[in-house]
Amino acid sequence: MSGGEAHVENSIWMRAVLFGGVFVAIGLLAFATMGVGVANVKHVAYEDAMHEYEEAKYDYENAKANNATDAEIASLKTAKDEAHHHEIDAHLSYLTWRTAGITILLMCFTYASFIGLGGFLNSVFPDDHGHADHGYGGDDHEHHGSGSPIVFSLGIMLFLMGFPSFQATLGNMLSGVDANLGDLGVSMLGLLFVTAGVANWWREDLPFIGNHEQIATETDAWFAGEHIRKAGLWVFIMSEVMVFATFFSSYLRMRTEWCTQWQVNAGNENCAAVDTLTASDFLRPNGGMLDGLGGQGDFMTLLPGAINTFALIISSYTIVLALKTAKSKDWVAPTGLMGKLMPTKKAAVRNYLIATFLLGSMFIVLKLVEWSHLVAEGFTIGAAGTTGQAASIFYVATGAHGLHVFIGLLVMLYLIFKADTVGYDEKNGQGIEYFGLYWHFVDLAWVVIFPAFYLY
Amino acid sequence: MVEKLPGNFDIYFWNFVILMIFTVFEVGAVFFETVPGTDIEITLSVVWAILIGVGIVKGYGIAAYFMHLKGDPRVYTRTALFPVLFVLLMLWGIGLSNPGAVTELPSWCTPNWDYAKQR
Image (cartoon, rainbow over all chains, first blue to last red; front, side):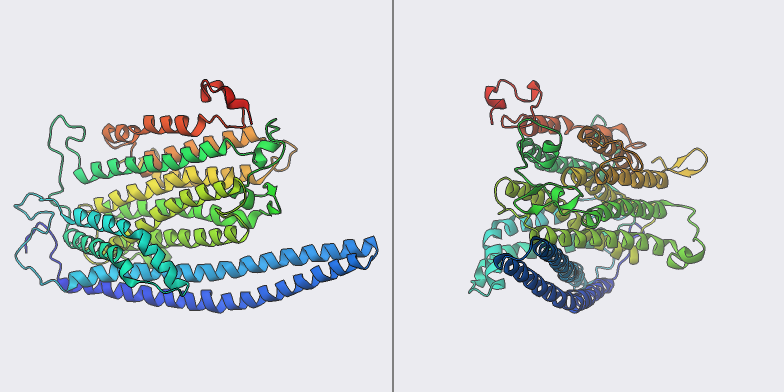
């Protein structure tokens, strides 16, 4: 073993497989309790509410047909409207638990397969005692770069090439239609390449303890003297800025054409009435109404988006705390409860990363719960008129952001694994810093998306 | 990296607190129709000003302190600003230059499109 990097026995990767097992157990438990147990109770309540609404509607229609007094009709109409609101609340409550249970199950299965499969592939490698250069160089070696990103990119390309058949086949399988499993082939091959690329990337990075970080040596270059990985990450983030700029400019383009409640309230002479509902009309108080949709927003409907905003900000802070702790040369264990949670520097870094991971996971769960409510309330891409456009750009923009959060969570799984095994310190803590840059960017994108799509 | 303010204040902690407060302010601006406890109406222009203003402050806080642009070599700030020109062109060229806009956008937003006001 060289002094240039940590020696990692391949058997340590079995701990990643164990992580995978824990995620499967958590996913199944969450699904059984939330997605089945509580959701079934809520479904019974929803069916009762539906039944009450049907009865109230029948009484109201019956009273009108039998020429009841105006007072009786008004009273029955009030009862019918209340029963309708109660039915909607019961339906959304059922959807909340059902969607949360299914989302946690799917997320945990993805986490398990990602970390578990990557760990398993590395654990079956023979130990290579005496060869120190896994990609980041030993004491006497220059860093020779990594081929893993190329394998990873090839996998992504294959996955996307096969994606149309992949999603159609999965759709057929889920709806019980005969499906040709061979149509999954190209995408599955792509996923295999992705897994192999990621597993090899981990294998190269895990022993890295901060020696021989690649530095730009060209003296008149922009990034002269800077870490190449950091410069590369900033260039990557700038390309991501362009991706989100396309969503936002498309949204602006469409938004300037719509007669929303805001335009009507502002007295725009071209907008006599509302012709488009946006997501904010369903979520914020006093939102617009059109064809019986929207206008039902209150504090509770705005809450998931607001909680998510706070969750991302807090997670940005916890990852900063993980970095600060790793980089600290004179770290002292805190006292009290925090001392029990973080007795050592290694545990503190790992636990701050776990806190970030949990907040990010909560973001995804709340996001999908919120989507399920919006779809149930009629905010779909198939909605009439330009409301369908509004739904389309909303789901594309917030979905792309959610995908970035989820990819960040998958990367964070590895960071937690490394923090728990080799550990991060002042020499190799830049791994957290570079991931943190991406995570903060995701937060930054939300700073634009949240007011534009949820509030305005 | 800038970590401490004079008086041993933790810059990251205070940045976090400010981001939280401004987010509450942002949500409140949309949630209330009037300033709580008064009859002062929160108009569309005020909402715009608050959302854009808060967005700029929050964006600066995240980029400057959490992403360490303040304190890191200038080359990173220049890299971060590099796509701004393209982003502005996209926002203007695609986002705002909309001939079908109903908002009576200023003339620089709808150059030489006589049909801009038709709908």
